[in-house]
Amino acid sequence: MEEYLQLILNGVLLGGLYAVVGVGLSMIFGIVKQVNLAHGDLMIVASFLSMVLISTFKFLNLWTVLILVVPIMFVVGFLLQKYIMMRVMDKGMEPPLIVAFGVSIIVQNGLLLLFSPDARSLETPLAIMSIKVTNMLYIPMMYVVDFCVGVVVILLLHYFFKKSFWGWAIRAAADDEQTAQIMGINTNNIYALAMGIAIASAAVAGTLVGATNNFYPHTGPQYLIIAFGVIIIGGVDSMMGSLLGGVILGLAQTLGGKFFGPGYQLLSGYVLLLILLTIRPQGLLSKARRAD
Amino acid sequence: MKSGSILEVSNLSVHYGELLAVEDISFTIEPGQVVSIIGANGAGKSTVLKSISGLCAASSGSIKFLGEDVTTSKPYHTVAEGIAMVPEGRHIFPRLTVRENLLIGSFTPRARKNSDKNIQKIYELFPILGERCDQFGINLSGGEQQMLAIGRALMSEPKLLLCDEISLGLAPVIIKDIYDKVHEIHNEGISIVLVEQDIKRSLKACDWAYVFLEGKVVLQGSPEDLTEDAVQKAYFGT
Image (cartoon, rainbow over all chains, first blue to last red):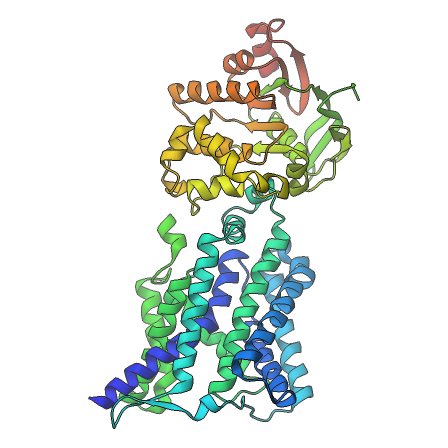
C-alpha cells in the first residue's frame, strides 16, 4: 500500500515540475501561434546559468539564483522574439518553426562548446533531504520544492493573465491581433513580452530540473517532448490545464514504470497522451474550444 | 489643408496586391462634423477607414490628422493621436469580460490615466454594459456587442471616431438605439465618420456625405442637397 502511495505522491509532485516545463510552450503556442522548438534548450540554458552562478558565487542558494536567472532569461526571451522570431512571423507557420529549430541547434552546440557533454547538476542541500511521512514512506524534498514552485508559478501566471492590464492586452492580442492594434496595443511588443514571460517560466523549470536531475547540453529536446505532452493533455493556453497535464503525465510515468517495468516509464506517459489525444484532441481544459 | 480641419485625406490610393481598392480620393472632416461614407460592398469605404487608422498602407496620397501626417503611422500610434475605430463585425475580444474589453480600449498612456472615470461614462451611455460588466464578450447579443465596440473605442478618448457598418446584422429597433447613442457622442464634440450601406439612415445622421463607387468618390454634399434618388444612382453607378 505504501509502495503505491509513494508512487502516486512522486507522480503528482513530478507533475508540478512538468507543469512549469510545459506552461511557457503552451503560452507561446496559444498567444503568438508559434511552436518554440528551442523552449527545452532555453530551459537548459537556465540550468547551466544557475550552475555557473552557484559555483562562482558560493553564497548563492537555489532561491537567490532563481531571483537572478529568471529576469535574465526574461530578457533573453523578449529579445529573441523581438529581434529574431518577429522577422519571420508574417511569413507563415514554417519559417518561425525553422528559426526556432535553428536557435535550438545553436544553443545545444554552444552549450556543448562551453561546458562539454558531461552530466551536470546543481549543488543544493535540498537534493539530499527528504520528508519522512511513515517508516516506509519518504518524500524527496526536491520533489516537494518542484511541485510547490510549479504551483506558485502557475497561479502567478493565472493571476497575471486574469487580473492584470498587461495580461488582458496579451489575451486581446492572442484573440484578435488587428483589433488589439486599433486599441493602441503594439502587438509586436506584446508578443515579445509573452515570450519573455514564457522563457522566464522555462528558467524556473530549468533551475528546478538542474537541482532535481542531471542535465547535459542535449537535454533540452527531452524536456520539449515533455512540454508537448503537458500541453496536449491539459490544453493549449490554459494555465490550470498545464498543471493538470503535468500531474497526469507524471502519474502515468511513475505508475507505468511500476506496472510495466522501468523501461516503459516514458512510453506509458505517451501512450496515455495518445489515448487522450484521440478522446479529447483539444486537451482537457482547452479554453479555445470552450469559447467556440 | 483647410484651416481647422480635423482630418484631411489627399489623393489617397490603396492597393490590395494588384487590385486598386481606393483611387485618388480626397476629402476633409471639420471638427464636430459627422460625415457619412456611403457605398455598396467593395466600394472602398472600409479600406479608407483602415488607411486612416493605420491598418492598411496607402499606395499614394496623404492623411493628415490635426495637421500631423499620419499616412504611414501604425495603428497603435493613430489611437494615441486621437483616432478610434469601431471595426466592421464588432470584433469584441470574446474571452475578455465586458469590463476588460472596455479597459483594453484605454490602453494608451493618456487614456489609461482616466480609465476609471471614462468607464463610468460608458456605463451611463450604455447602462446594459454596466449590468453585464462581468460577462464574457462572447455571451453578449449582437446589439450589446455593438454597444461594447463603440464604448471600447470611446475609452481611448478619441477626437475622431471611425464607425464601420455599425448597423450590420442588427434589428431595426437596436439600430435606432445605436444611432441615438451616436448622436449623443456627437453632442460631446467628437467628430464621427460613419461608413454605411443604408442610404436613408446615413443621410439622416450626417452633416456631409460622400458616395463611393469602385474606389472613387462619385457624389458628395450635405444631406439637404442630396436627394435619395441621386444618391441611389451614384451608389449603383447607373
